[in-house]
Length: 200
Image (tube, rainbow, N blue to C red; front, side, top):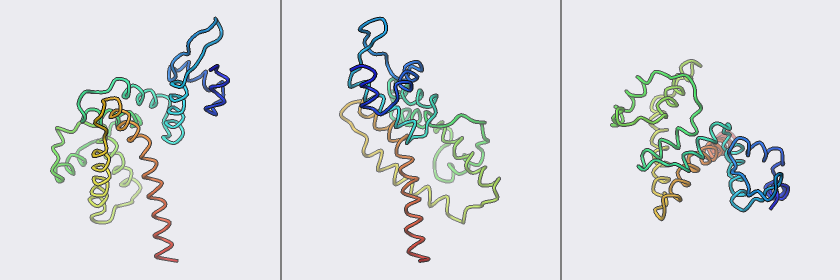
C-alpha cells in the first residue's frame, strides 16, 4: 500500500507518518521509485503500536524508542526483561536518595543489592513528593498498596507466554506500558463507585 492508504487505514496523518519515519520509529517502506514506497501490514501494525504507546501509554518519542529497543533487543533473563520494560517507561529525572526505599525493601524481605531496577527512583521520588506536599499516608497504607500490587504483578507474571521469546517480550513490555493506564482508570472508577455507595 502507498503512504496515503497507510494513513487512511491507521487514521494517522501522512505528515505524522513521515515524522515517525524520520525518527526511525517506523521502518522504511520498499522503494518503488525515487519518491515512492510501498508499505505492508507490518507497517500498519507498528504504526498502531506507536500510536498506542504515545496516546494511551502517554510516552514521549524517546520513551517509545526505548520500548521498541527493549522489544527488538531483549535481555536474556526474565528479570532483566522486567527491569528493561520498567526502565523504558521511566521518565528520566534527577536521581533521588534511595535510603528510605532500601529500608522498606529490607523490611519486606527484599535484598536491595539484588534489585537494581529503575523503580527505586520511581518509588523514592513518589515518597519524596508525598512528604513535600505534606500528605502522609495513613498507617499501613503503603503495605496495603504493596500487597495489592503484588497480587496484580503475580497475575501478570503467571500470564507470560512460554511459546516463544518474541511473544514473552511483547507481553512483558506492552503489559508494562499499556496496563498501567488501565490500572489507574480502574482505580478512579472504583473511587467513584465506592464514594457513591458510601456517601450517596
